[in-house]
Length: 117
Image (cartoon, rainbow, N blue to C red; front, side, top):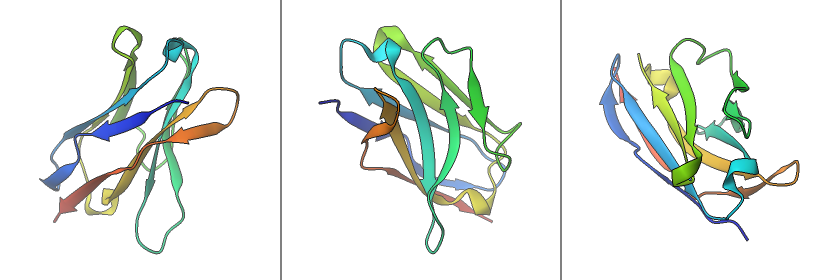
């Protein structure tokens, strides 16, 4: 069983920045693909960013490209999402998930991000 815990959400003005953190348990964290998802009311959950085990292979959703950066510190079992130039439409609950054996099997409880205009 892998435990996933997000932190770092909050209220920020448009144009501001936040950094989300996600700590995951497990001695083989470095082998997990990690993803950040978000969901806002009335919308489907979407993949925001993804990082492979080695950290060199990343993916970003079109809506966040150039503004968000995903990174990981395997020594700390932690993945980060640096969010810059935040917009009101970035308001959502952000979830971190771990793909241990292919699918995103382990999810955190989510952390809320609210961007005021």
